Image (cartoon, rainbow, N blue to C red; front, top):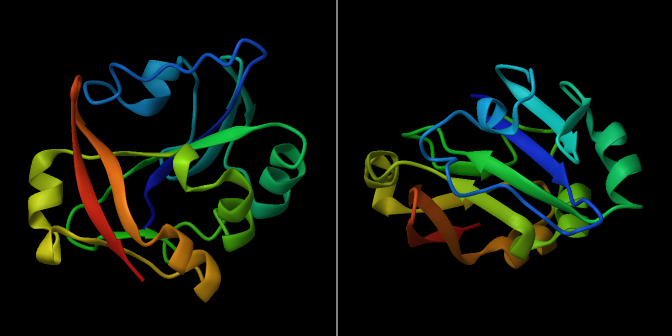
Length: 150
């Protein structure tokens, strides 16, 4: 299953727009006409690439710091590696875990087996780096830590 994922390139003022993402679709909040499924790249509030592929993403993030904002589809629990091949192990390695922002409702978290995410990027080293806990925004001002297994 594919899930919506956005890569935001930091602007020169290091501003990110985050607080209302629980209440609105990511593309609506960012005021861009993104894809329903797939990966869109937004820089300084402008849609740079709609439905980007891995090579397009890599060419941008090698020169600009980036964050990945990813929504969760209930049931599967797979954050990376199955339905979003554009966010490859190489992309994740460059962006780093601390710059991955996960958005999910509490119901989606509770629907996961053992309330746990998993990753399957095809690179055991990257999967290991992602394992542990990740902060998930479940409401406007509420977060929870969710384990990631590889």
